[in-house]
Length: 95
Length: 470
Image 1 (cartoon, helix red, strand yellow):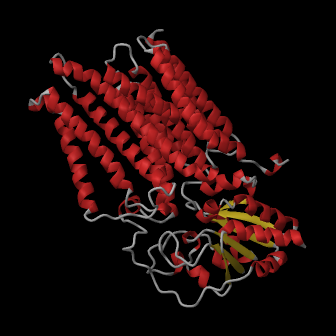
Image 2: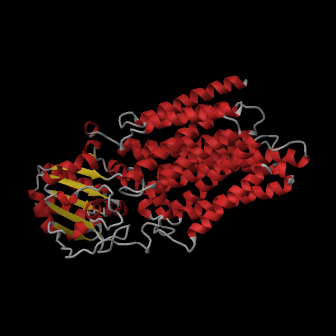
């Protein structure tokens, strides 16, 4: 894949992101932040690819560290967001 | 499995991320949106595992360790500790992206040392970006985490010649980056290039620490939102390094969402981003605005009870003090008792109340306050003059009338909740000290304002006791 193609994707994603998020109500700012934070853990894909059988020891260590950190980010981020959102209730939900 | 199928699944994952983020924008669909985006993540991980040549033993180990840490942290963190947790997760994501960039460089480095390969300008540039943004995100987030959890002291810290030091670091990073990327052209050997790379790593990490140092606790909503944006951009940069679409798309979406939140937070304080980042707001060298005359009048819980008992409309304005005192549950109990007593109760939330965007909403949601009762600043201010009692719980600058009246005040122009327009104001406060900005709050000196000193939780509990007692 060449540079222009990747930049093309990046720019389109930027506009899409802007349009998606600009009207989010302030009550949801925290879940939006922690939920999108979990998405930024997508770097886990890069970490997985780095844990390669052909890698030398040092590169392998870098990869495993990256994998652990990114997994904490992904798992923790999604679970904590879910925990928060489970608490958001309307009047009708009250028991 | 062929590359095209893997890429197809990445596209599906990206679509799920987009849908998920979109659904996070509305309270009704938010939880489902988060689940959808997590399915996207799962798909991306599973399909990546099918790539050739992965070392599965280590991968399983890494996934298990990371999953356990993340899972336990997410399940055990208190809602009041949420800002720290989000900051820390941001930092982990940033460091992971840095390491992915570094790992990719290591692969190239073997070839560079052997002289069989050149570092392409594109590859070199994106590696530097991943390391730079990831490094700043990591140490900046750890610093923010320390400030939020009180481990490092939350005030803005100004060190001498801060701007000069930071400026030099930035220049150093730019210079080293150019040398690194164009190293081949300069005839630098692979070994020197590696030294330069290490220099960039160290400087990036330093920049994160020094960048967040001069930012005080009350400006943390902006910082967390910005670091959130950076963690996404770091992932996108790592995506450019390993030429992977799903990293670029997902990272860019997060980068955008964080940036928009940052802008919203800055607007809510009527300050520019550079003012938040560089001015050392809240450190001791600040102007303090016009002197206030008069005195703060303390009241007893009994007095407050009699006024509240007669009130037909009450607005509760929570701030960081409510989070510190963990008072959200008793506050909600008080709200319920007031409602049973026939009063209309609303909770007015300022966009930057607390230490992260939406902090108060999360705490009140934890206490089971239905979100219809939470009102934003712009919708509550017009009706404020008709409100009988405004109860300010641990909020300070966001209700300081100096922001709209005193042109000499450093927070002049910041939109506030007009608590001073209510007929009576009760302000719960630990002591007589000033707020985060170090400013005296003119609200406390008004004729209609009464102070209830003490721990917010204890004060509200005894109010609740008064209501129940009769």
